Length: 135
Image (cartoon, rainbow, N blue to C red; front, side, top):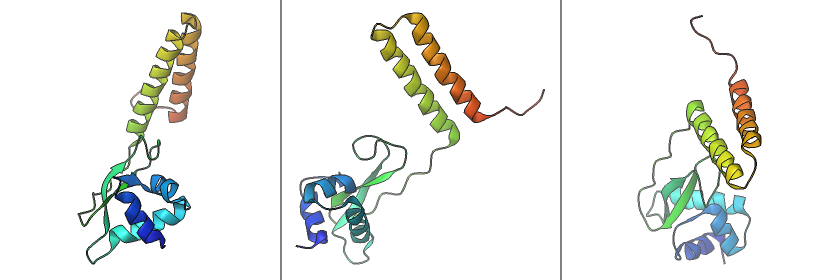
């Protein structure tokens, strides 16, 4: 059976990203990504379309948006704009603060937890470089 048919059959169970489809049909993720993209871009009535773009969570767990495919002839969801440096830095700090809260809740002494958090903040500000502006 062709990969295209397997992709369509897998999507009968619900919306999925290409990695999930590859896992279900037992094929390489890169092959599934290329085939699913081609199926979603077809000019004739499409078999599948991009329902949404997932940036976090079950598909990628990272920052790059990944298409989540749905069975049927619908309009492809527009690709989201890339994150700005400020957005990425803000999310990084939020993760660091959640980590610090977890460390505190795990029974680590408060002084040691504060060092962990300050080390994360220090690395984050060093990565940004020196600030320019009025002196």
